[in-house]
Image (cartoon, rainbow, N blue to C red; front, side, top):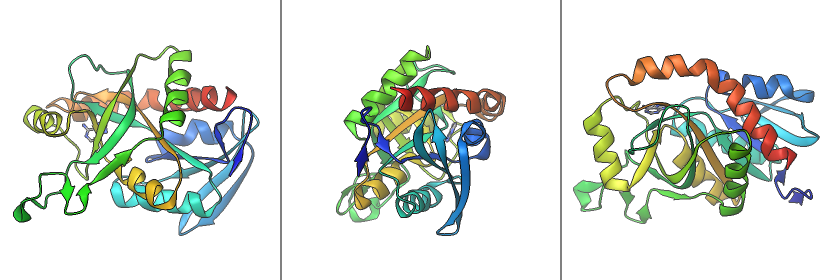
Length: 235
Ligand code: ADE
């Protein structure tokens, strides 16, 4: 693994689930080269002189795990996941950033065998984010003026649009935001041995309004993602 003086892993893998979440990063890459790795496109290039490998992961946990595998295969030394999430804790508002301390798959249900929700027999279906890379991501987000919260992010193959469901996930896991990929990336990164940090911009409150708020926020996310990754690698 190569580290620059900045200590941000290089090449840095960046995962955006949806094209809208990554297209400004892609446009900002100098010397971009598109590769096809494990069936998906990975774009290599330089951002602020830092080697970056950008993958559009696709929506959902399986896609996120495959995107990590593709980035590892392409030589990434660490992974940062960006994009949007729904807030499920008081005080976390639309436009704020959430940086994961840990991540859990909230939709894992082996309760029939007396495991708590979110647990396989082997333990919690989730993992921790890398503390150092996450600290750097927090500093990068603050440096561009973001309000940053740190805490557990809960991931599932579900778009959460109900206050009851949000409350249940918050109570069960102590999570502050929900999205659809992070915990799968955490699992894959742990298995492969790559540091991971996840930053999500809050697009909605995972309530009855979530679909509308989510759509409206998407216009802003591409620039926010670019700014935070630029600030991260420029440090
Ligand atoms: N990503 C953004 N908002 C979300 C929500 N409410 N549920 C799941 N993923 C999301």
